[in-house]
Length: 177
Ligand code: HEM
Image (tube, rainbow, N blue to C red; front, top):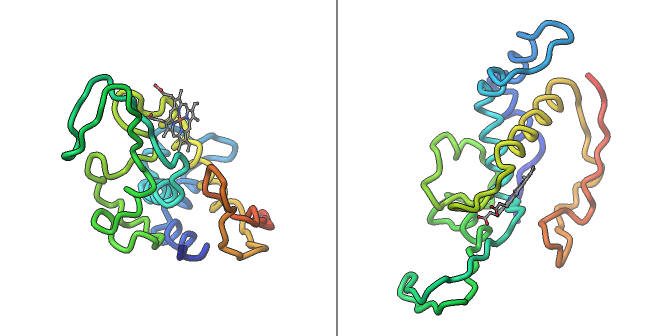
């Protein structure tokens, strides 16, 4: 899998200085507000792109309550049907150059059922908004207050891991700006 470098990620966040503007608009010691978070449109795209590429929950199982036909397949009552989120997120008919890290692809909202990081329908992740908020806040503080250096660039993934994660654990050195 070809993932682009930290620089692209960092430049994307800082290009329009969205995060720095938000930080500079705050008085010393004041916390971020929901209004500030709602201004984080770039970081929001980064969060979606990270979730698309990492597909933390790879598949979403559903049990058929009745016999039914799904895309010409006969599904019997009681069968488990797995929605393969990772396959969907790497489908080139849905995402141009799907292995590229390109947050700008989320300038348009994805079509329904093209993006399934948090599941679908009535059982959609209850913590979705909370998780996205945490990621945005983390990224905001990371890029506005720190510089970091990746110590191990090995892009290899841990084999047989339930969640996609780097073998190296991606050790970094962080320095306050
Ligand atoms: C990046 C972080 C997270 C990801 C990618 C994620 C993803 C998911 C997925 C794919 C499902 C299954 C949805 C489905 O079956 O359609 C789920 C369910 C759930 N998640 Fe998350 N989740 C995350 C964080 C959280 C957090 C922080 C909480 C709680 C604070 C949470 C609480 C739940 C609960 C309670 C369910 C079960 C919902 C139900 O069955 O009705 N999740 N999550």
